[in-house]
Length: 271
Image (cartoon, rainbow, N blue to C red):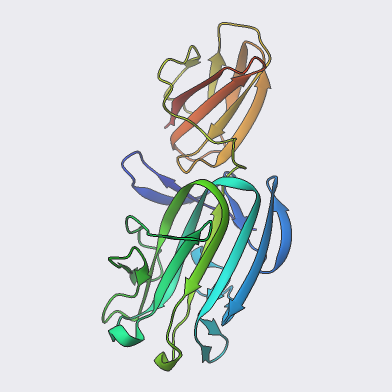
């Protein structure tokens, strides 16, 4: 399965690359355990699957049941345990031709409407979609279909609902999306600790770096990308070599936890 990673720089710039850090949800019904999270998928209304248009945004198709049935449709995801964050990519949203027939994609986190704060980035398939004043996604005017990639939501996420509110009178429409999840809740990162006693050398790194802490207490270090998605985990006492050769260049966070409950965080730059 082709896995995609959406890596954003500290200022929110997002780049897409292949990576082992992400966990893509590909099943469209039933339950499956992915990375320690049991994910149950249900749907309602006009839904289908797609594997052909815009590979960044497969397999979920909402607002359409192929080949030519259109109307409200939604996918609903339950995460057990809850997750730290998720990322969504979108495509195929129709033009905003008429406000009465407007196609809008809405998100609900933990059963509450989630207003998307900012647009994502170009998905490589469509024109850029429009962010509505309510924080939803709609198609741009006079540009066929549109979408974007890299909508990342953080927090304790137990459920997600993605809804296409296309009016059946539109006669055409529907949109597709992909979903990537992070680690179970509680394994995320906290970047507020500025006094980590850990020493990394070198940093920035090319492939490997040595991490050393002052004590010999059994510990683990977890490496996260800028989405908060876990990339690697190592158990050690006092010192460990981190081999990051297989990871794309960019910024990463590390989180150290020892058996006495101490936690330390910091940043790594791979060039």
